[in-house]
Amino acid sequence: MFKDGKLILKKDTIDTDSYKGSLWNILIVDDEPGIHEITKIALNKFKFKGKKCNFISAYSAEEAKEIMKSTKNIALALVDVVMETDTAGLDLVAYIRNELNNNIIRIILRTGQPGQAPEAKVINEYDINDYKDKSELTAQKLYTSVLTSLRTYRDMTAIEKNRDGLHKVITATSSIEKMISIDTFLSGILEQLIAILYLGDYNEEEKTSCFVATVDTDEFLHVAGFGKFEDMGKEDIYIETKDIIYPLIGETDSISSEVYKNDSYILFKKSNLNYLGFVLYMHIDEVIDEQDKDMIRLFLDKATTVYENSSLANEIEESQREIIFTISEIAEQRSNETGKHVKRVALYSRLLAKAIGLSDKEADNIYVASSMHDIGKMGTPDSVLKKPGKLTDEEMEVMKNHANLGYKMLHSSKRDIFKMSASIANEHHEKYDGSGYPNGLKGEDINLYARIVALADVFDALGSRRVYKDKWNMDDILKLIREERGKHFDPKIVDMLFENIDSVLKIYEEHKD
Image (cartoon, rainbow, N blue to C red; front, side, top):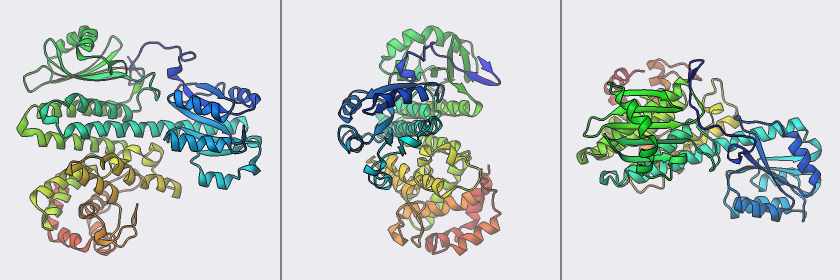
């Protein structure tokens, strides 16, 4: 169905007032029954992303601990400080963060005796998200605090899903030539796509139902599923969906097609090899705008390419590069930046690597690894990432954290290419004079690959239009780089840039936006 120019994807009708999987789970921990009732009344009509709240009551910290151990996906806990003991609430927070290792749940402390737990001390020593005196917590302030907390919970959950998906991609890519891990590979990409698009809910009980499959004339060859398809075998998925998919595939003579029919959204791309093609099947109720549809098409296109390349042993290395660039392009698209930025930075980095004497292998590796320099922006909220004006100090700290997020996404891999990517992601904002972030590294303490990408990234960013700035002219760009020689940038790499400026400018012209 199309409405107002947008494609609306439907799923089975669900009574959201009774189905817990479609609600935000909020834990109320307080020894006063009246507080529970007041909280529920104040938030009775509260909705975020079309979902109401499911309230879970605990009347002591010990009862809350048991609930936390047995209940998944609690988004927010409203915790009284003083219950069975003067520090029961604080002890519960420590238990959640340190013993359960749950850093996703948002925690708001509430107290009627603020003097027993001073706010500054509590905020400094405990990992909480808000601290309120019950007397000041009006219905409006409670509404605002809960809304802010749930928005943060949603974003952090998306970050975790992205990280899990990327981990699957990294794990599978190392052995994809054996065709053993293609299902894991596809699953990882599919999981990242769902997270990036914010599709579906953030409870395990209800996930977006979709799958991607390589299909032949009478079977599915490889399948990666999500939601209700996640635990189904490829034969069962084939039986359930073949009567929908195959007639639609047969209706098209084009290389690729996009169809909405029978409450299903299906994208199909024909194969260049000896099988029929690639199918992406979605069964959800979200509104998909044109930018998101472009992202989905990009996913299917790149997933198809990777699968086919992995079928050809002599093209396995190229298939790995394809998926890395795909993920990087998705990250750039989230920040409204052109995917050509990734390509140009990769080309500049390879050129500079060769110019300073690195081997062809290292230069080729940095060409791939450099594309992941801003992968951590997948975890940066849109409110910061896409803000057109100047960032506040607090927003700048959120933005700076993308370097650390990128490192965490990549560093666990044993493959050299991802180790290089992790170092680049973590250190490409360090400055040669030690004034950069996140660790204030100086000189040659900064990884050489990161020093190369730092110059390539700044050179290209200044010459590109962004949501927060216009592009600079080339004379001003080169003037700044000369001025920052030995300050922001490694002097040797700056010298190589100017020695090879004709080749650099050729790349710039040939790959313009």
